[in-house]
Figure 1 (tube, rainbow, N blue to C red):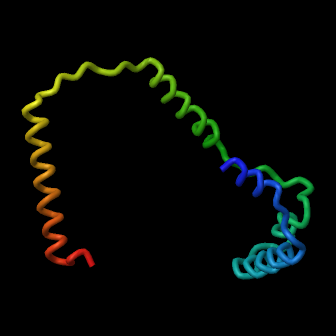
Figure 2: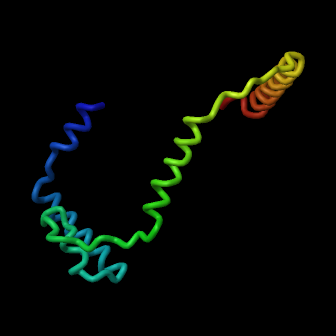
Figure 3: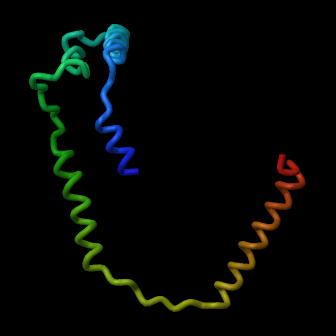
Length: 114
Protein backbone atom coordinates (compact mmCIF):
# COMPACT_ATOMS: atom_id res chain seq x y z
CA UNK A 1 0.00 0.00 0.00
CA UNK A 2 2.87 2.35 0.81
CA UNK A 3 4.47 1.65 -2.56
CA UNK A 4 1.17 2.47 -4.26
CA UNK A 5 1.02 5.78 -2.39
CA UNK A 6 4.59 6.56 -3.47
CA UNK A 7 3.74 5.71 -7.09
CA UNK A 8 0.73 8.03 -7.00
CA UNK A 9 2.74 10.82 -5.37
CA UNK A 10 5.48 10.59 -8.00
CA UNK A 11 3.14 10.31 -10.97
CA UNK A 12 2.89 13.24 -13.33
CA UNK A 13 0.20 14.11 -15.81
CA UNK A 14 0.89 14.57 -19.49
CA UNK A 15 0.25 17.77 -21.36
CA UNK A 16 -2.87 16.27 -22.93
CA UNK A 17 -4.27 15.50 -19.48
CA UNK A 18 -3.65 19.10 -18.37
CA UNK A 19 -5.38 20.36 -21.51
CA UNK A 20 -8.40 18.13 -20.84
CA UNK A 21 -8.53 19.41 -17.26
CA UNK A 22 -8.45 23.02 -18.47
CA UNK A 23 -11.22 22.35 -20.98
CA UNK A 24 -13.37 20.69 -18.30
CA UNK A 25 -12.70 23.54 -15.87
CA UNK A 26 -13.69 26.13 -18.50
CA UNK A 27 -16.82 24.14 -19.39
CA UNK A 28 -17.92 23.73 -15.75
CA UNK A 29 -17.02 27.35 -14.97
CA UNK A 30 -19.26 28.52 -17.80
CA UNK A 31 -21.99 26.11 -16.72
CA UNK A 32 -22.07 27.37 -13.14
CA UNK A 33 -21.22 30.99 -13.90
CA UNK A 34 -17.79 31.03 -12.22
CA UNK A 35 -15.34 33.72 -13.24
CA UNK A 36 -12.61 32.19 -15.47
CA UNK A 37 -10.00 34.23 -13.60
CA UNK A 38 -11.02 32.36 -10.44
CA UNK A 39 -10.68 28.94 -12.08
CA UNK A 40 -7.48 29.54 -14.08
CA UNK A 41 -5.01 29.85 -11.15
CA UNK A 42 -6.22 26.52 -9.79
CA UNK A 43 -5.23 24.70 -12.95
CA UNK A 44 -2.68 21.95 -12.31
CA UNK A 45 -0.68 23.32 -15.23
CA UNK A 46 -0.19 26.62 -13.41
CA UNK A 47 1.16 27.05 -9.93
CA UNK A 48 -1.10 29.37 -7.93
CA UNK A 49 0.65 32.56 -6.93
CA UNK A 50 -1.23 33.03 -3.67
CA UNK A 51 -4.81 32.06 -3.15
CA UNK A 52 -6.86 33.80 -0.50
CA UNK A 53 -7.35 31.74 2.64
CA UNK A 54 -10.94 30.58 3.03
CA UNK A 55 -12.83 31.99 5.99
CA UNK A 56 -13.79 29.07 8.22
CA UNK A 57 -14.74 31.00 11.31
CA UNK A 58 -14.63 29.04 14.53
CA UNK A 59 -15.22 25.64 12.92
CA UNK A 60 -11.47 25.02 12.86
CA UNK A 61 -11.18 25.54 16.59
CA UNK A 62 -14.13 23.27 17.31
CA UNK A 63 -12.79 20.57 15.00
CA UNK A 64 -9.67 20.47 17.18
CA UNK A 65 -11.23 21.05 20.59
CA UNK A 66 -13.90 18.34 20.43
CA UNK A 67 -11.61 15.42 19.53
CA UNK A 68 -9.10 16.59 22.13
CA UNK A 69 -11.86 16.63 24.74
CA UNK A 70 -12.98 13.10 23.82
CA UNK A 71 -9.39 11.85 23.92
CA UNK A 72 -9.01 13.39 27.38
CA UNK A 73 -12.20 11.71 28.59
CA UNK A 74 -11.01 8.42 27.12
CA UNK A 75 -7.73 8.65 28.99
CA UNK A 76 -9.42 8.96 32.38
CA UNK A 77 -12.26 6.53 31.72
CA UNK A 78 -12.34 3.09 33.34
CA UNK A 79 -14.07 -0.06 32.16
CA UNK A 80 -17.14 -0.62 34.34
CA UNK A 81 -17.58 -3.85 36.26
CA UNK A 82 -20.41 -5.76 34.64
CA UNK A 83 -22.20 -8.76 35.98
CA UNK A 84 -23.98 -10.85 33.42
CA UNK A 85 -27.13 -12.86 33.90
CA UNK A 86 -26.07 -15.92 31.92
CA UNK A 87 -29.66 -17.10 31.64
CA UNK A 88 -30.59 -13.92 29.77
CA UNK A 89 -27.50 -14.24 27.58
CA UNK A 90 -28.44 -17.80 26.64
CA UNK A 91 -32.08 -16.86 26.02
CA UNK A 92 -31.20 -13.92 23.78
CA UNK A 93 -28.69 -16.05 21.89
CA UNK A 94 -31.32 -18.73 21.24
CA UNK A 95 -33.84 -16.08 20.14
CA UNK A 96 -31.29 -14.48 17.81
CA UNK A 97 -30.37 -17.82 16.22
CA UNK A 98 -34.06 -18.73 15.83
CA UNK A 99 -34.73 -15.43 14.05
CA UNK A 100 -31.68 -15.96 11.85
CA UNK A 101 -32.83 -19.45 10.89
CA UNK A 102 -36.42 -18.31 10.31
CA UNK A 103 -35.53 -15.37 8.12
CA UNK A 104 -32.95 -17.44 6.23
CA UNK A 105 -35.56 -20.11 5.55
CA UNK A 106 -38.11 -17.47 4.47
CA UNK A 107 -35.57 -15.88 2.13
CA UNK A 108 -34.69 -19.28 0.65
CA UNK A 109 -38.37 -20.17 0.19
CA UNK A 110 -39.08 -16.85 -1.54
CA UNK A 111 -36.02 -16.53 -3.76
CA UNK A 112 -34.30 -19.95 -3.75
CA UNK A 113 -31.18 -17.73 -3.38
CA UNK A 114 -31.39 -16.67 -7.01
